[in-house]
Image (cartoon, rainbow, N blue to C red; front, side):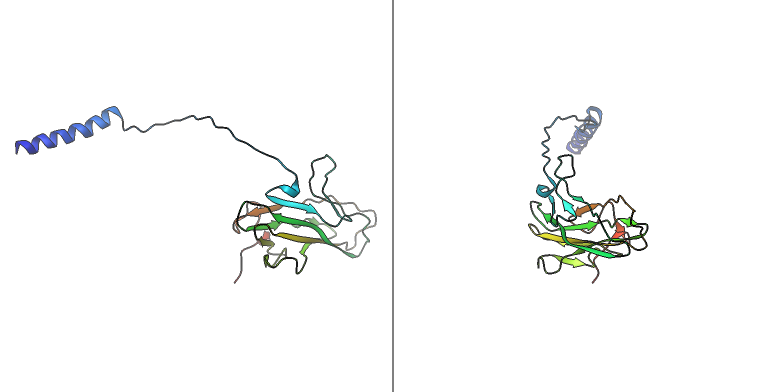
Length: 190
């Protein structure tokens, strides 16, 4: 029994000593590290954006930034105008497919839509591509997606000029930061 009391006493001393002198955990750490960031043109980024149809798209935003710019000029009133192969989106990520969603700019007196050029790449699986309720597309690694632009100018006067903006977002799944189902992005249907 004496031996048992000694062992219990040593165990209690070890536990008590650990509590008294700390467990080795810490509350703060500061460590400096180097971060390398490389900015490239839209065409060479992880999500490559390249102008296609020069009647509507260019690879320069005018400030030397090599950014995709959509600029539709001289559209007819009360007409539907399509620009095939306006631009392409390329998955330049190191590996894996990416889901890409595009916002559809809203016009007060007309419609602005994106559409996918058919038969461009068998590696691209679409889910109601760029439609009203869902608009994301899966792009395989290294593949590109050719996108057209359709503009309908319903009851728009011949002197109307409109500035619109679009957002292109890529994700490794169908979860997007700037889009939600029913609001220009969706979930895959079976």
